[in-house]
Length: 338
Image (tube, rainbow, N blue to C red):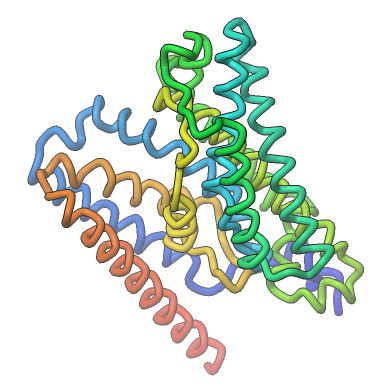
């Protein structure tokens, strides 16, 4: 095996056929939806609504980055909703007891909680070879239970939170909402990590071919643990941001939210079988979901129909992406035959 083709090398993770075309197809789909939503409600593409859409989608984007890293290793994490709840509740209870605590410390506290959960999940999957879906499903219930025990079933409301804590999500930097700024910074960091670092490229090798990764001397178990640790840290961060944004910490916060996060990754081109996924596609998938959540109420779609429509649009986008990918693969095979 040549150096250029070893798992984890720059050329070892060649761009798969159809990746660029899949993203182009998804972008076109988003543009068509924008035109349709704007035709139904002229306020959809206003600056105020776009800012609101981005702020409401930022937490989803942050979580999707962590899930992408996990999915690249052929894993999955169903515990993130519970981790969001635990990190958010822990930070909210701390703020209620210590109103003068720095917002930065609240963020660090939430990320530390998330890291602890992610570390345990990573050990279960990487060290004890427990299937990711089983390990994270078990942790989901454990962590959710810890949240209820910690809070004794009570809520932490906005009047118990300091202005500094609430301004974590409500403040702005150079006119941009803090949530959007954080999401953009994480997108950039993740893009660099996955595309331009040796560790990032090795994650793709682990997901593409675990056996070959082991033979090549890649520390597969350590990288799998790292992926879940990253997911945990971002879940903890999202937990603090969630509570700050909605000014309420509850035991049932973010129940089922992991499905939206996984959907954003899959829409963006990540393969559940591992070894595939790009930040650029992830951003498009996240924006598509954010658009649906924002636009359907604007065009007066009944809440009873919104979930059905969201599912149908997601399915249509995936079918379009698959069709574009297959067409491009056929074209590539024809060129090789020639």
